[in-house]
Structure formats: structure tokens, C-alpha cells
Image (cartoon, rainbow, N blue to C red; front, side, top):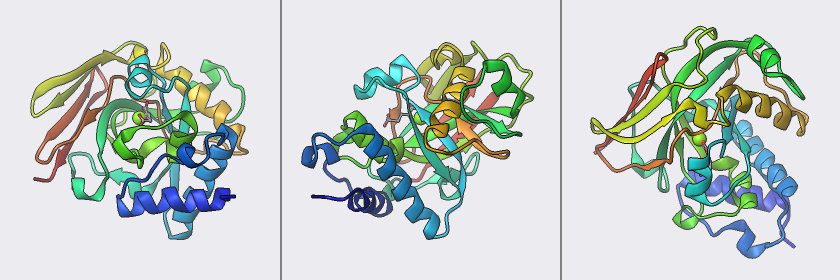
Length: 256
Ligand code: OOG
Ligand code: MG
């Protein structure tokens, strides 16, 4: 029998070497979602042991567009580390990834701890600032194909994040226009309302889901609310910009 620790090693190595692996559920069709979260925790523990630092969490599959694109319709979460941070306006090298995609998101910066069952008002009281963001997702599975347990074990495809400028949380961000530009042309268009009706619901879900695993959102943590639109597969030389009405924009360039 394959142990969960071995599976953690498998997904960790795939991310580190940017080498696609077969879905875990091919070997273990009955891998449970709980076991998959245990694999994720162990794989992130390996990164922490190599010197990376936890900087927050990401929520995934919080919009219909995302659920439809990957064929999984449950909200998932993953952990963010400092090694995933890409400077605003920065450049990435596609060779460091398996098959990276980008998606426009909204990010929260926490100023107070948050965990468990909370209301939207309680969640917002713990928020320091809100920013436009791009998430770089990179499933470690062949052909970007996975079942729910696979993607959870693979840290919910999290691979990188770019954060724009932080805004006061008093901005009404519930239904703002979002455009993802690729080389200056609109590639994806949506609204922040696509995130569970309002991105604050993603924060409420984050507080609940991390608590199920004995964790909490900490002051200083970043919480990525999830993709507004379907993700765009990156190609060398592309310049990607996400504009979120009133919140601002965030840019990323791919090396040629
Ligand atoms: C799963 C991760 C989804 C989001 O924002 O919805 C996600 C995937 O699409 O690979 O990050
Ligand atoms: Mg995402």
C-alpha cells in the first residue's frame, strides 16, 4: 500500500522538478478528500522544511467558470508560501512550470486572526486591505486533468501569485468588472461577483475550511479568493494584465 507520505513526496517532487505525474487516483481510485488534504499538508511541510515560509492560503473553484473549466465542482483550498510570490510587473520563466495558467483574482490581507464559522461582517472586520491579483496555477498532473482528490493533494494547483496595490477594505468589491488582458487584448472578462456571489464569501469559506484542519488565518496572511474567469494557458513572451474595476491592475510577463 502506498502511504500518504509517499504521495506527498510524489506531488512535491513533481512541483519542484516541473515534471508532470499521473493522477494519484489512477493508482488509488478511492483516495478520499480527507486523505488528499493530509497529503497536501505533508507536501507543504516538506517545503517548509526546505526553508519556505507560509504566507497565507488560496481558495479555488469558487466560480462557475473555473469549475466548468476543470470539471470539478467543489470549493478547495491550498497553502501559499513565500517562494510562490512573484513581484508585481515581474517576469516568470515557463520552463520552471509544467503547463502554467493564469487567472484574475481578488486577494485579501488579514489584520486579525480568523477561523471557524464566521459571518461576512466578522470576516471583513479581520481584513486589512483588498487587492487585484493574478494567480499562476500549474497542475502537476498530465494534461492538467484531475479528480477532486488529485487537485487537493496537489495544493489545489497553486504555483504563484502576483499582488497589485492594496486598497482599503471599505471599497465595495462585491460586483466589479474584471478583464484579463493578454498582450493588450481582452482574453477573459467577468465580475468579482462570479466568486461565490461576492468574494467575501470565499473568505468566510476559507476561515471555515482551514479550521477543519486545525489552522487559522493569521494577521499578515494573504487569502486568494479564487479565479473570476477561466484560466489562460501561458505562452513564452506573453504580457498578462488583470484589471479589477476600482481596485487597480496587476501585470506579469513571461520570458521569451
Ligand atoms: C484548480 C485550482 C482552482 C481557482 O482560482 O479557482 C483555482 C485548477 O484550476 O487547477 O485556483
Ligand atoms: Mg486560483
